[in-house]
Amino acid sequence: MQFFRSTKGEISPLTIPAIGLELAVRLPPTATDHILTVLETVNAPGFGPPLHRHHETEVFRVLEGRYLFEVDGQRFEASAGDVINVPGGAAHGFVNITDQPARQLVIMLPGMDAQRFFFELGQVFASERHDRDTLNAFGKPWGVEFLGPPISGVSVGNSPSHGEARDS
Image (cartoon, rainbow, N blue to C red):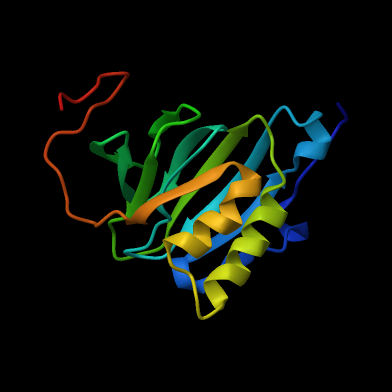
């Protein structure tokens, strides 16, 4: 492992307009012996990734805004200051449910080359063909399975917090 410092001014965000994503790798896996990767994301209103799963655990800290998350079929809202742990292998997605851009800090364990993954994903979304079969062909070498479209931004009632789980 090595010392690494990431300052906002030296980061060039990657943008994928088709999924309303702006992403900056704040700590690459090469700086942590691939133990983790840290990302900062900005999601446009009403946008989020397709429902998907992968072997990496993801820890999300909402920095600004409000999201509707779905993790293994459980839906809940998360707002600024909330932390969500999504275990590796869990089907998950989220959507920004505000009318302003929303931001998250995302920690991926173990680390992965998120810059390359999202750059290539952006190329898939920029192509004319980005159906589930095409996404899964792209995701297979990365260990990512795309399960369906992004979740809808329908609001929910009380949300689980502090380790509570919502009954199915």
